[in-house]
Image (cartoon, rainbow, N blue to C red):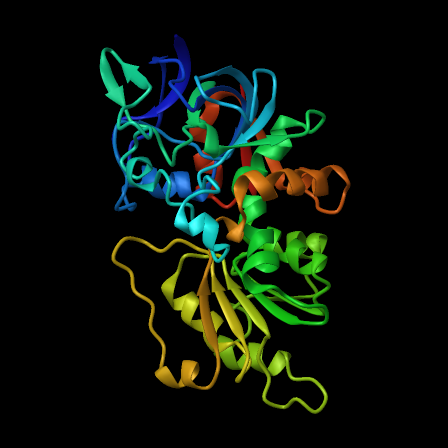
Length: 375
């Protein structure tokens, strides 16, 4: 069938709106009509050419929401008409990783997904007779897409597509990093580096966890109001403090008899390896945990003095906020619908597919939190 898609033909070039062909679902696959999709920094990371796993031509997009329109043989967990969120981190519930209960990083389709292919090693998309690769197993920059059954989360039907699409990546990544990865406890002191879409969701995750002190760090002064809106208690602009950032933050966290200082938890949402080091070193001696969320450029390395780790600090990474997609994503949709978390204010721009490149421009200029394309 013919579908409309924003195609990434080459790294570093704008997306091109084309009519492409989509084959129907094969066994254990589903076709989804995408109703809305967010434009995420990870899409920009790949489009820029910085992503070592980037494949072209491809249909990007991984933060979507839509309706199942067709199912392949053997599919039992969803049916046509069901509302779903595509999952770039699937949940098969059968592989060693899923069965371990120690990680959300399902390995069932990792090998083919990383090559831009469906589990049988082929693509469902084509253009002028030539295959176009899938992206992160999702390809939500098309108004219809095909996904493995294990890579869709069934969600309630009264939730608005243009808001819950953000749960497909940004919301879950930020809140999950707090709840699942760091396991922040009430009364904790935390620092969030980078107050973009992910950072703001970390902040509201910290608010959910009842953290006591939530420090936001960003070089954009406009982010102060955004952070406060979602629960930030203190704001630091490194360009304005006139001193080294880490000692400044450590001093801020000293309280009462605790004159060592440092945060119980820190979160890097920037992808900058120097900031990752600052986040670790701003942790409390003996028990501080620093969570790396941001994606660094290809070949980048993080470094710190061994002393920082020997004295009890912990460096952790997280993907998709440690969430198990088919299990946890429906719960987060419920949180949104029950007003436990906010999404609406972060959707700063609604665009048609024809204007998708403007969404990337807004991201580059720091003028958007999240732009959403509505089909």
